Image (cartoon, rainbow, N blue to C red; front, top):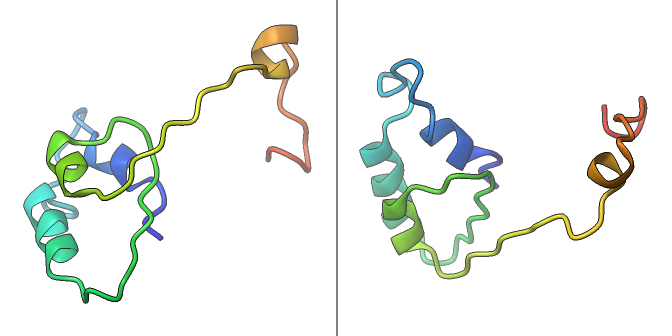
Length: 79
């Protein structure tokens, strides 16, 4: 599980290549054992990463009280 990897790779405000470079990530994914399944989350997936993916899902809020009723996050539930 590479939680929020897409968000990290999409950072453009400051350089992250010294910590997390796209070529190294792509190489690690391509060279993983065939029996290893990866789940990568986050928005703004890089086209190179998208090309390697077997399954891609997008989740959109169809009905959500944050937007629909201007409800703020609830302590103990969302944070």
